[in-house]
Image (tube, rainbow, N blue to C red; front, side, top):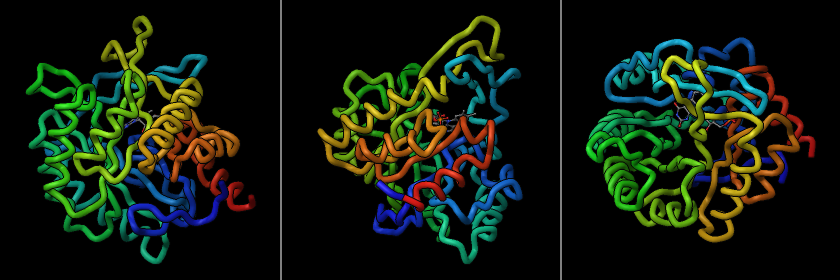
Length: 283
Ligand SMILES: Cc1cc2nc3c(=O)[nH]c(=O)nc-3n(C[C@H](O)[C@H](O)[C@H](O)COP(=O)(O)O)c2cc1C
């Protein structure tokens, strides 16, 4: 329960604090504001095969418990990520210990496979995080991670496509999170990331209509998910959701998380993750 190094995926993270997927882009957005080299790792925003514009404005809306976002997986596409974004980030982190985890998204299983096959040869990547909360167009828009067969097919295909470790990111709305984590593990996942955003809607606040809830309201939900999976499945967990303070990060670590990712709190103040990493290290 400290800021001391963590071994996960067979490698050492210098501390347990990560930047959560989608909230720091590929690092450029926060470079110069924080020292990326002081973090355990950065999880990139979702990468899809093709460039994606994302949803119409407004893409974020605040409310008392946190915020809603409907970004729509906006990203430059895997070719640009491979040619520009990841080489930039790897160069920025040269000589530092910060790990790079690439978040992967798609509308079909072959979309995920394409991204993972294209990026696996890049040495700078420590692991992939599979965003299983995307609608599966081949299953009528049902999320990949919402039922066992869809999740199994996705994780098996990703496993077969890469030699790198995989963490599967699950939605907090699943009725049996431990059961779905078991499906992911048995299909070849090395870890699960708990949790993704919670579906939400507030009238005329987002261009897309509904969105994903993140921030403080997610903290007890993510901590419970972490505890359930840690106790019942025993596989490694990357805890994420609602962390604003060092005490919040300790909740995830005490519940069994190996690493803790921070998103919304860092959008408001980008120095939060670095501060928490330092405070954990002080014990
Ligand atoms: C603006 C925004 C964009 C996000 N983009 C992604 C993404 O691309 N892939 C993903 O798996 N999760 C994405 N997330 C979810 C976060 O990684 C995280 O799971 C969630 O926000 C809960 O953590 P937090 O309360 O610390 O923000 C996004 C969240 C926000 C707020």
